[in-house]
Length: 549
Image (cartoon, rainbow, N blue to C red):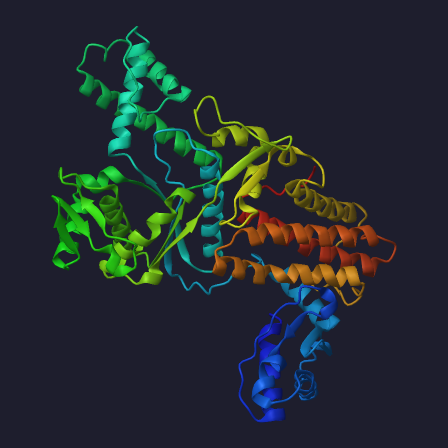
């Protein structure tokens, strides 16, 4: 049976105590103190009531405490600290029941509060004109874990990658590859001023030369650029898909911009906005009145030359998401797209969607460090550090962990040297080593003939380090729900570091397998539960949980 939820129990009992002591109805807030010395939970309700009751907060707190009933014997003690904080320390018996419940869970952390709501997260969506870079790697890890988190708490969430396979950048890709292709036959064709000059363009041209020889040399320049551009585009998309697969990211959908254009989806959006009275013509261009919906200024949808803007096509793409049944959209964009948020939000509101149904999180820049110095840009890609370069140096496990372990809106310094270390300094190694150690402890116990039953007596667990480890394991469900609610996957990595540290602290002070068989079995239950929580969390991050290191 699932143990009582302490926060709810404390809210109920504290609210009843306020009613009994002061004959008023109040809403009680409960928080987890930052320091264990203050107990397991606390409420500042006495401070909030001071003005209304015209009493000293500490006096109010004492009255509340004296009127709290605890028929379930959840509390070990209730104390008053500072000006009127009420702190609750839960009983050892309660924590034992929590450990038994954790042990009974096949999938720790899973809940159903998402209620099957259909959500979509679009991330990476890098232009297929060059290799994926480290910001894409960060976005891929973060987006992938976010979807896993939403699925974990009951949402029907999906991953999507938007492929910008149309428009000016694709024409520039074709012209750039064509110039390099012609150079292989002695021509001095120039790359366009805004074209792509990385060594990967030369590699693409060489691949096409090997496949087709001189086939495209004698064709008209425009035909050559288009043909080679489309072939290069296909190769780049395949490379992106391969990179994502190697990175353990499986997108449910790879959506092509070209499909929208072929179906004139953007023209349908233009007509809808016109009919709703949200457009006007100026200097031959068609403008959207985005300022009516909170944007800084109006935006062009169709140029005077009759060309749709990227913005118009992008609006049609987001509208297509709603048509597919998603009730909430989340996009992960790079820092250079910050100014784009308001205009997209404005367009979707103009199309009749609730403002809250569309959200954007900005993935901040990544600096790669080696020997404490920022790593220079890639020679092959020209002006970026390739994602594959990083994975090749540190491995997928370390890369995914390091890219997730900071808040999205914070720039990330990725220490390559640290990610490669096989010591406790490396948080990935530290956590994986803890998991491997737990596995070895359980194997050692089995070799010693110690086997634990489903109803093992764990009441002998009483040492502070044992109870602390139970408490830290018990936080997992709360951390998962909070991380999903806040859309902050770094809370999982932070928790794992803390859990591994709590386990190591327990292990340093207490021998698990000893001459006392009852204690050994109880501690083995604790180790088994901790191992399962770590394995579950690493699985959520798509990071391996090795049994030997």
